[in-house]
Length: 288
Figure (cartoon, rainbow, N blue to C red):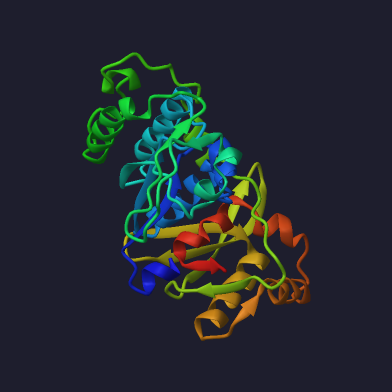
């Protein structure tokens, strides 16, 4: 959201092979699940996501190529990826693969003189996978996905040859995006509130003769209204905190925790990591 407010309208990232094994081999430092979650945050902030995709990486099997396509299909279907393009891997002389081909299961087809403008090196993949044969089907399916067409078509229909069935769970990306695991944060994590000042109302709830008070806090965003209802004391504290932050007061997570406890409130983790509070990101509360 901070990027969106600064004027960012789109990002392009290297999802590459969309396979955890191959991403680890590349030493990319990411997993497909992490990419899906980051894409969701970009998409929810109104930032378009384009993925740079690769096929034919050394040791990539036909099965992994199809599984990569399935990951991409699910990302499009979930609405967290809007644009992408497949590129076939090419080994260049001074890349990690070019410098250590044996480490990646390939070998140079022949020794040639390398120049600055012509440094592609023909290589032989030990898996023997015919990567060229996947080119048309991968690009055809992707073009359709970007136009919202054929998103539920079986993957084999995009190819002219027989391909393996995907081994990826049909709900892999959906499950990743619905995972409400608690977020990790450091004491030095900075909090920024970019939303409009919220309004607060104390309401009384009753059930089976029992009554209790709740704080109803409402946030008006550019596209929607967000309302959360939490314990009265916690709600008053939260409203005051956001008001302070709106005035320009900066706080890190440690300061927020100390402020919470100074107000005589308990169980900060249980309060902070719950569904009502998780909605505050959409209202403009950022943790960076």
